[in-house]
Amino acid sequence: MNNYDLTDTQKELLRLVVKRDEENRLAEKGMLHLIRGDDKYMLLGCGIELESLSDLDALCDVSLLSKERVRPDPVYRIKNAARNAVANDFQVTPTQPTPQVSIGTIIHSMSGGNIQAIGNVQDSTVSQIINDPELLRSQVETLTNSLLHEVESVLSSEEYTEYLSAIQDLKKQILEENPNQSLIKRLVQTIGLLGDVEGTIGLMTRVWPLIQPLLVIIAAKFGQAT
Image 1: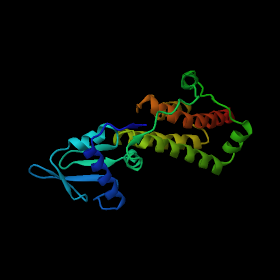
Image 2: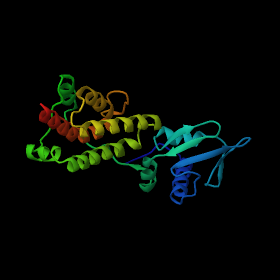
Image 3: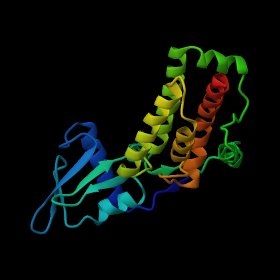
Image 4: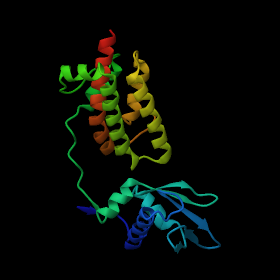
Protein backbone atom coordinates (compact mmCIF):
# COMPACT_ATOMS: atom_id res chain seq x y z
CA MET A 1 0.00 0.00 0.00
CA ASN A 2 1.20 3.50 -0.83
CA ASN A 3 0.86 6.77 1.03
CA TYR A 4 -0.61 9.97 -0.36
CA ASP A 5 2.09 12.46 -1.31
CA LEU A 6 1.28 14.74 1.63
CA THR A 7 3.23 16.18 4.52
CA ASP A 8 2.34 15.29 8.11
CA THR A 9 1.04 18.83 8.56
CA GLN A 10 -1.30 18.47 5.60
CA LYS A 11 -2.57 15.12 6.88
CA GLU A 12 -3.22 16.52 10.34
CA LEU A 13 -5.02 19.49 8.80
CA LEU A 14 -7.36 17.19 6.87
CA ARG A 15 -7.95 15.00 9.93
CA LEU A 16 -9.04 18.10 11.83
CA VAL A 17 -11.28 19.36 9.03
CA VAL A 18 -13.00 15.96 8.62
CA LYS A 19 -13.42 15.62 12.39
CA ARG A 20 -14.96 19.07 12.72
CA ASP A 21 -17.30 18.31 9.82
CA GLU A 22 -18.42 15.05 11.44
CA GLU A 23 -19.04 16.99 14.65
CA ASN A 24 -21.18 19.48 12.66
CA ARG A 25 -18.96 22.33 13.77
CA LEU A 26 -18.25 23.74 10.32
CA ALA A 27 -20.22 26.67 8.98
CA GLU A 28 -21.76 24.42 6.30
CA LYS A 29 -21.91 20.63 6.16
CA GLY A 30 -19.25 19.22 3.87
CA MET A 31 -17.79 22.66 3.16
CA LEU A 32 -14.78 24.40 4.67
CA HIS A 33 -15.20 28.18 4.81
CA LEU A 34 -12.27 30.53 5.43
CA ILE A 35 -12.16 34.19 6.41
CA ARG A 36 -9.29 36.19 4.99
CA GLY A 37 -7.48 38.44 7.45
CA ASP A 38 -4.58 40.83 6.92
CA ASP A 39 -2.01 38.07 6.58
CA LYS A 40 -3.78 34.87 7.66
CA TYR A 41 -6.83 32.73 6.94
CA MET A 42 -9.18 31.66 9.73
CA LEU A 43 -10.75 28.21 9.22
CA LEU A 44 -14.31 28.58 10.49
CA GLY A 45 -15.24 25.88 12.98
CA CYS A 46 -11.70 24.55 13.22
CA GLY A 47 -10.16 27.10 15.56
CA ILE A 48 -6.90 27.44 13.62
CA GLU A 49 -5.30 29.93 11.26
CA LEU A 50 -3.22 29.41 8.13
CA GLU A 51 -0.66 31.79 6.68
CA SER A 52 -1.38 30.56 3.13
CA LEU A 53 -3.64 28.25 1.15
CA SER A 54 -0.76 26.01 0.06
CA ASP A 55 -1.66 23.09 2.34
CA LEU A 56 -5.31 23.18 1.29
CA ASP A 57 -4.27 23.38 -2.36
CA ALA A 58 -2.04 20.34 -1.84
CA LEU A 59 -5.09 18.44 -0.59
CA CYS A 60 -6.94 19.55 -3.73
CA ASP A 61 -4.06 18.27 -5.88
CA VAL A 62 -4.62 14.73 -4.58
CA SER A 63 -8.43 15.04 -5.00
CA LEU A 64 -9.31 15.08 -1.30
CA LEU A 65 -10.69 18.63 -1.38
CA SER A 66 -11.99 20.75 -4.22
CA LYS A 67 -11.72 24.51 -4.36
CA GLU A 68 -15.19 25.96 -4.81
CA ARG A 69 -14.43 29.65 -4.43
CA VAL A 70 -11.47 31.93 -3.78
CA ARG A 71 -13.12 35.34 -3.56
CA PRO A 72 -14.36 37.07 -1.54
CA ASP A 73 -13.40 34.33 0.94
CA PRO A 74 -12.11 30.84 0.09
CA VAL A 75 -14.43 27.82 0.27
CA TYR A 76 -13.39 24.17 -0.14
CA ARG A 77 -15.62 21.11 -0.56
CA ILE A 78 -14.70 18.03 1.48
CA LYS A 79 -14.82 15.04 -0.84
CA ASN A 80 -15.81 11.54 0.20
CA ALA A 81 -12.26 10.53 -0.69
CA ALA A 82 -11.06 12.75 2.16
CA ARG A 83 -13.18 10.87 4.68
CA ASN A 84 -11.93 7.56 3.30
CA ALA A 85 -8.32 8.75 3.40
CA VAL A 86 -8.62 9.77 7.05
CA ALA A 87 -10.42 6.54 7.96
CA ASN A 88 -7.68 4.50 6.25
CA ASP A 89 -4.85 6.60 7.74
CA PHE A 90 -3.96 7.89 4.27
CA GLN A 91 -3.13 4.45 2.91
CA VAL A 92 -3.96 3.91 -0.77
CA THR A 93 -4.92 0.44 -1.90
CA PRO A 94 -3.27 -0.87 -5.09
CA THR A 95 -5.16 -0.30 -8.31
CA GLN A 96 -7.81 -2.94 -8.86
CA PRO A 97 -7.47 -5.18 -11.96
CA THR A 98 -9.36 -3.87 -14.96
CA PRO A 99 -12.84 -5.43 -15.12
CA GLN A 100 -13.50 -7.76 -18.03
CA VAL A 101 -15.63 -5.32 -19.98
CA SER A 102 -15.05 -4.50 -23.63
CA ILE A 103 -15.44 -0.73 -23.67
CA GLY A 104 -14.37 -0.64 -27.32
CA THR A 105 -17.16 -3.05 -28.25
CA ILE A 106 -19.75 -0.94 -26.49
CA ILE A 107 -18.55 2.23 -28.21
CA HIS A 108 -18.59 0.46 -31.58
CA SER A 109 -22.15 -0.71 -30.93
CA MET A 110 -23.22 2.82 -30.08
CA SER A 111 -21.69 4.35 -33.18
CA GLY A 112 -23.23 1.73 -35.48
CA GLY A 113 -26.73 3.15 -35.21
CA ASN A 114 -28.12 0.78 -32.58
CA ILE A 115 -27.28 0.41 -28.93
CA GLN A 116 -26.68 -3.31 -28.44
CA ALA A 117 -26.54 -5.33 -25.24
CA ILE A 118 -23.09 -6.42 -24.11
CA GLY A 119 -22.59 -9.11 -21.49
CA ASN A 120 -24.34 -12.16 -20.11
CA VAL A 121 -27.88 -11.28 -19.06
CA GLN A 122 -30.83 -13.65 -18.84
CA ASP A 123 -33.52 -12.57 -21.33
CA SER A 124 -36.28 -13.51 -18.92
CA THR A 125 -34.81 -11.25 -16.22
CA VAL A 126 -34.50 -8.28 -18.58
CA SER A 127 -37.99 -8.88 -19.89
CA GLN A 128 -39.33 -8.96 -16.34
CA ILE A 129 -37.60 -5.68 -15.51
CA ILE A 130 -38.80 -3.71 -18.52
CA ASN A 131 -42.37 -4.99 -18.17
CA ASP A 132 -42.63 -4.04 -14.50
CA PRO A 133 -42.54 -0.21 -14.16
CA GLU A 134 -41.72 -0.28 -10.44
CA LEU A 135 -38.99 -2.88 -10.86
CA LEU A 136 -37.56 -0.96 -13.81
CA ARG A 137 -37.53 2.27 -11.83
CA SER A 138 -35.87 0.55 -8.88
CA GLN A 139 -33.16 -1.10 -10.99
CA VAL A 140 -32.35 2.10 -12.89
CA GLU A 141 -32.27 4.09 -9.64
CA THR A 142 -29.87 1.61 -8.04
CA LEU A 143 -27.49 1.60 -11.02
CA THR A 144 -27.47 5.38 -11.48
CA ASN A 145 -26.96 5.99 -7.76
CA SER A 146 -23.96 3.65 -7.89
CA LEU A 147 -22.56 5.64 -10.81
CA LEU A 148 -22.93 8.90 -8.90
CA HIS A 149 -21.20 7.35 -5.89
CA GLU A 150 -18.22 6.32 -8.06
CA VAL A 151 -17.65 9.74 -9.61
CA GLU A 152 -18.60 12.02 -6.71
CA SER A 153 -15.21 12.07 -5.02
CA VAL A 154 -13.25 12.37 -8.29
CA LEU A 155 -15.02 14.89 -10.50
CA SER A 156 -14.87 18.61 -9.86
CA SER A 157 -18.00 20.37 -8.63
CA GLU A 158 -18.78 21.66 -12.12
CA GLU A 159 -18.16 18.26 -13.74
CA TYR A 160 -20.26 16.49 -11.13
CA THR A 161 -23.18 18.87 -11.73
CA GLU A 162 -23.02 18.15 -15.46
CA TYR A 163 -22.71 14.41 -14.81
CA LEU A 164 -25.72 14.48 -12.46
CA SER A 165 -27.77 16.30 -15.11
CA ALA A 166 -26.89 13.62 -17.69
CA ILE A 167 -27.84 10.87 -15.24
CA GLN A 168 -31.21 12.47 -14.56
CA ASP A 169 -31.90 12.90 -18.30
CA LEU A 170 -30.90 9.29 -18.96
CA LYS A 171 -33.18 7.96 -16.22
CA LYS A 172 -36.06 9.93 -17.69
CA GLN A 173 -35.38 8.52 -21.16
CA ILE A 174 -35.15 4.92 -19.96
CA LEU A 175 -38.48 5.25 -18.16
CA GLU A 176 -40.16 6.84 -21.20
CA GLU A 177 -42.48 4.67 -23.27
CA ASN A 178 -40.69 5.75 -26.46
CA PRO A 179 -37.12 6.77 -25.57
CA ASN A 180 -35.06 8.96 -27.90
CA GLN A 181 -32.22 6.77 -29.15
CA SER A 182 -29.94 9.56 -30.40
CA LEU A 183 -30.29 11.44 -27.11
CA ILE A 184 -29.59 8.27 -25.12
CA LYS A 185 -26.39 7.63 -27.09
CA ARG A 186 -25.17 11.14 -26.32
CA LEU A 187 -26.05 10.77 -22.63
CA VAL A 188 -24.29 7.39 -22.41
CA GLN A 189 -21.16 8.97 -23.86
CA THR A 190 -21.31 11.64 -21.15
CA ILE A 191 -21.82 9.27 -18.21
CA GLY A 192 -19.20 6.95 -19.72
CA LEU A 193 -16.75 9.88 -19.52
CA LEU A 194 -16.29 9.93 -23.30
CA GLY A 195 -18.06 13.18 -24.09
CA ASP A 196 -18.84 16.40 -22.25
CA VAL A 197 -17.36 15.12 -18.97
CA GLU A 198 -13.96 13.44 -19.11
CA GLY A 199 -12.43 11.12 -16.52
CA THR A 200 -9.32 9.11 -15.89
CA ILE A 201 -8.90 5.61 -17.33
CA GLY A 202 -9.17 4.19 -13.82
CA LEU A 203 -12.49 5.92 -13.26
CA MET A 204 -13.77 4.76 -16.65
CA THR A 205 -13.06 1.14 -15.72
CA ARG A 206 -15.20 1.60 -12.62
CA VAL A 207 -18.19 3.26 -14.28
CA TRP A 208 -18.52 1.11 -17.40
CA PRO A 209 -19.46 -2.13 -15.57
CA LEU A 210 -22.36 -0.13 -14.07
CA ILE A 211 -23.31 1.34 -17.44
CA GLN A 212 -23.32 -2.10 -19.06
CA PRO A 213 -26.57 -3.34 -17.43
CA LEU A 214 -28.19 0.00 -18.27
CA LEU A 215 -27.30 -0.64 -21.91
CA VAL A 216 -28.88 -4.08 -21.68
CA ILE A 217 -32.10 -2.56 -20.34
CA ILE A 218 -32.04 0.17 -23.00
CA ALA A 219 -31.48 -2.39 -25.77
CA ALA A 220 -34.42 -4.43 -24.49
CA LYS A 221 -36.59 -1.31 -24.43
CA PHE A 222 -35.74 -0.56 -28.07
CA GLY A 223 -36.35 -4.19 -29.00
CA GLN A 224 -39.74 -4.04 -27.36
CA ALA A 225 -40.64 -0.90 -29.29
CA THR A 226 -39.80 -2.34 -32.72
